[in-house]
Image 1 (cartoon, rainbow, N blue to C red):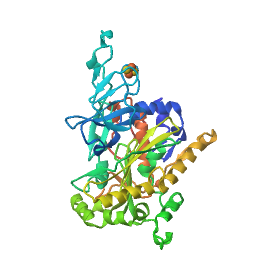
Image 2: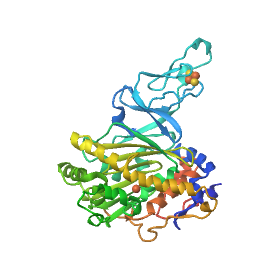
Image 3: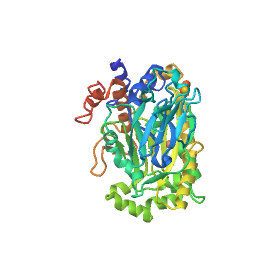
Image 4: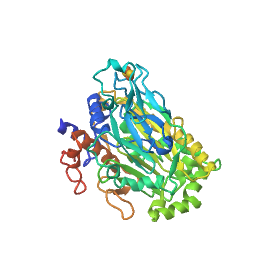
Length: 445
Ligand code: FES
Ligand code: FE
């Protein structure tokens, strides 16, 4: 029931019920009410640059084809044959003139229209025009491709809201935009998708303490120790006014950025001609002062600016995710800088990256422990910053607090509960706040 789900999360008191990470019935409802109603990231435009270029991806657990059309537009449709449901395309990516199902040979053009049926005279009632796979809405933002199944959802710009300001820090440094470095890394972690998404949304807290000390040490120049690079103390966290997005960033301090990305990247990102150009483009020093920005767009997409990794977390049941990851770089950067971003992001945040290993280890352990009955009996604490770090800021949009904070996590879970208790976007839109911390019409507080 609606009240029961709303009671799993408390924004006001700062806790979440751990059953949200394990319950199979809640998971099925997530697929319907969160993943089938949200704008989901599916990749970068440069990954399908030419007509006929395609890549396969997922929206929740639904497989989709993402295809560049002859008119340069992008279509996203269910990667499922309408005949008997076979996976239409089994390649990761490529260039195609059509997609032919390997089961009985039905063929679809790149727009998803059924164009050929073997022995079609034996299907006297079949209307080919009406027999294509389900199409999703598609919109792009600064090179990123998003899709949404729900025709009632707001447009992408409205959905992202002020989160665009923080995305621009990574995706709009130059008029040339960004390009994706070739290849998408994919790996499996046995944990709930919300651990990964919430951490990228809200958790700078863990970055300078135990879980990343080994990765930070490994990234330091040989003549430097931990005491030479103390974790920064100045920075802000962003919580979306409504919508579940979040970000956190240090101000000016590049110590941790050096540990994740190396000195060459830090110089390019913060000091050189490209950085000066970006600062001019941003027009306000607020943008260029942000260092090592982590961020998540609700529900399951994340970025790490300065490392320049882009993440998609595909749920695979309540207890598992597929992580999909790629790296972007300014399109007009030199080949040397592009390659340095590739090397450094592989070293720090990738399937074998030293920082990713630390993060995954935490989530796997928590998920494993939640198999216990008693371990699921009491709420987890998400109260950091309550009552002191929830204001506004003249330079940064959204609700802004101190960088070490769990306010964005509370925003993430609160929005999750709103979506889970709203049967459609009309109901969801009624929960848009007139004022901060106002009781939601869904009973969430
Ligand atoms: Fe695709 Fe039969 S399932 S042609
Ligand atoms: Fe981390």
